[in-house]
Length: 447
Image (tube, rainbow, N blue to C red; front, side):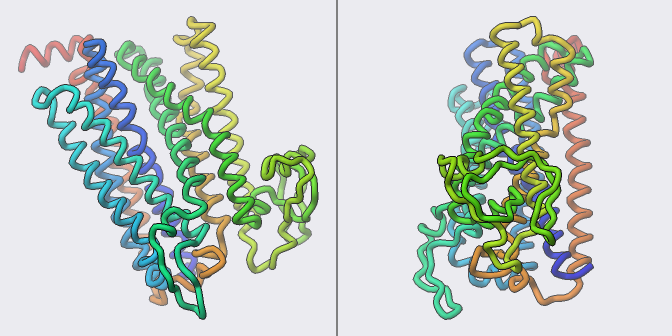
């Protein structure tokens, strides 16, 4: 494997795994805190058990996220030394603040896990809520650093030198808010659907039905917030991309020719050599409206840019289409669920609705990974957009493919460990977490 390809592949694998842990860390503590709040309000012991069960899951994923995040920080220095040499002093602030948020999260989760019956009940609840706030802050700060790569700010680039550095301006660059908002909403959607899908499956197995039903409804509520918020945050993000990175927008839509009243493309197969897209459904003037709120505005095409600055058009276009497809599917599922919740409550226990959520378990993370692909691959060939090319930032050291194999093996191993630990947690629900189960009562009597 070519060293440059190996370095990019290693970062892709690492980010692809870590983004799942990061999103769970951003959202799962809020589910846990909501269940805890329900327990404090109702004194229903099922909510207490659910809070404890979810908190153990949060702890497991927090630990694995810490491992994968640490590996990523090492990879940045090892694989991209030229990038870090110049970029580190500029966008180091969000990484430093992210480290602070991480430590707060670690302390808060320790207080929460071991604070039962030791702290004031509302202080204990706040510790759990603080886990979510600090996790959310960590995610937003890391996205701010990534957004800087898409929208460099906070310095002047003069004669190949980075001068007049302003880390505050670098952190709050033009892309940070649209990216952070869309990422946060996507995290709620993906994690909500994943958790709801797992509990839907357990309800269908007819075990601890009341316990898993309460868990399912909380998770589904969070999933709906993300699903219905995604089009709004996506619209803000798309308008930002159109303004700052028109070439990325053109690749997303496989839009080759500059035109007014540009059509929005659904599906299709891009042909970069001929500069056209085949077999696509085109909705006239919609792309122009989406990027500028004007049906007749001009949208630049790929042919207006040097070909050596094009990102891989097919990869970006297909990833964008995958994100849109699964996003629409989740909105449809959310609409059906809301209709059932308000008008057809008898549907809520139906097997077909539970199966729908079960099948939708991975949809949010598929859309999330596709969206991240659009963000990262769509920026190519730049590692710092318009300033430094990715190939100029890679390490000159040989043998990167062996590092790729090694780190990939670690991430695959982590995945199996996580599956094993979470599966064991689910199996312990009757004994440890569901007070309505006979096994739980037997265990408490013995102890």
